[in-house]
Image 1 (cartoon, one colour):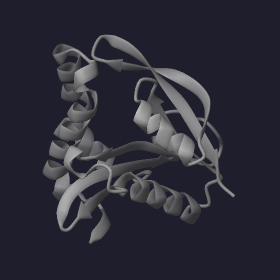
Image 2 (cartoon, rainbow, N blue to C red):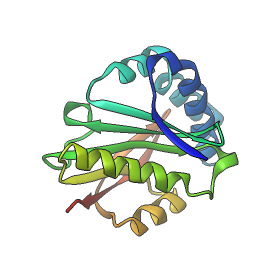
Image 3 (cartoon, rainbow, N blue to C red):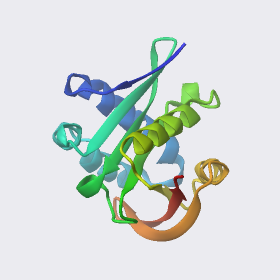
Image 4 (cartoon, helix red, strand yellow):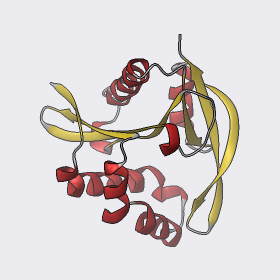
Amino acid sequence: MIEIKQITLNELAELKALSIKTFTDTFAKDNTPEDLKDYLDQAYTEKKLTSELQNKQSEFYFIYSDDQLAGYLKLNVNDAQTETIQENALEIERIYIDSGFKRLGLGKMLYNKAIERANALNKTAIWLGVWERNFSAMKFYHEMGFTQVGEHSFYMGEDEQTDLIMKKELT
């Protein structure tokens, strides 16, 4: 059984732990331990996550598989977006699936939740940034109909990296 539910501030500890675990699982092998630690120490503090959870222009969702926490989604609209890509767009800032739950279609379910929310909010486009070396994620987004429309710098500690900006028009 799969369940997707909106995250509340009461689940801050679970969100922080899952954020650190999934980010580390995804990016540790391609980055130095120092750069990874620097990033995690700033991106996933309780203070920062609390602020993000309290932002009315952001939404977080957990996905559960057989009552086990398996991943999460973060969406942004309006001023909460990390960049202005297009008027009336929704940003998928994070889709992360715990390594033990990959290849079960959960990422696609979270993506579908993002589309559902974009449609409910009358958004005309959906966009995201994906690391240029995260080939499996890029392949997934291409399959979902996204195209690259730009790029921006992303800092992993002191290491400047490139995220590709991908966008999909909604009909």
